[in-house]
Length: 308
Ligand SMILES: NC(=O)c1ccc[n+]([C@@H]2O[C@H](COP(=O)([O-])OP(=O)(O)OC[C@H]3O[C@@H](n4cnc5c(N)ncnc54)[C@H](O)[C@@H]3O)[C@@H](O)[C@H]2O)c1
Image (cartoon, rainbow, N blue to C red; front, side, top):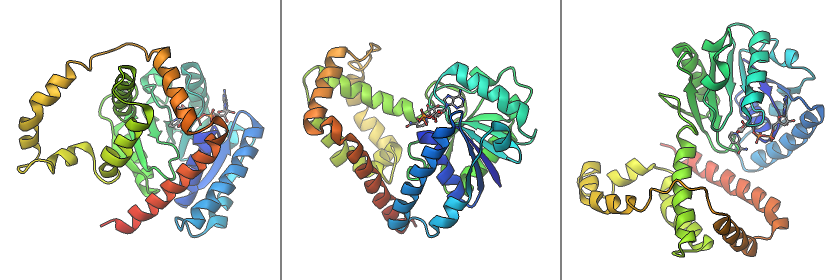
């Protein structure tokens, strides 16, 4: 299959690796030609790390399937599937989808990586609106496989299925979002956890380090191989309903204190920033990001070996 990557920033370049790893031909375009060159350099580095971690077998073949192109026309010319990853601005999405819809073959699927904007906000007036949808990744998608697939009310069901099949075909884990909502599901879950985490720090119950330990040495250990529903299903002798009946009072009482809709206060932001910087100085951020990716690679390799 021919894939068009529209926007070669952080997310676009990672998508290029996913599709090329899956055996597809990838044409990668960006409004800034320097960004395509930069992406190719970074892709080569990431692919070398993936090979070193034993997660891919043919790095040269993978890189050979990714071609940088100079125009959007060229990227879309033979594409059956296009993945847009331009900045998170409604006007930008509107403009690029209008151009993509005019240039791509009528049967091509047009997907956006947007983290929060529903497809109906930028595809309503397009002739080809039935072939547009969201395929929201988690960064970097070649290491974190979940992809949220969410159509607008007018997206054709067969297009949702095609996007699903493309994602499964390249080893991603698609999740269907049945109705449009801001932030889809993953970021809403993350948002709920972050909101409570900020509140707990703001009210002096815990500091940044203690909160992070609670997740990474507690909740997160299970979450890397099972979700919260499976977790509670296994945490009461008779399963999920038993758990819900035993602990409903406790969660309901806590929820009465979890109703804030305020912005995160500048005070708590600065307090958390200071605590994080004392644990990790700013000039060590990049090195720590690379460390995170190596840890994710080791985890991905472990999960692959542990798959039933
Ligand atoms: N960064 C993340 O963790 C993450 C995760 C999931 C989804 N997303 C979503 O992916 C999308 C891209 O995010 P990113 O982090 O890769 O951004 P980025 O800033 O790294 O990349 C954006 C790219 O778009 C190019 N660009 C900007 N305006 C353009 C235009 N008008 N025409 C053509 N090219 C243009 C830039 O040159 C840049 O290379 C956003 O919608 C974002 O919400 C991001």
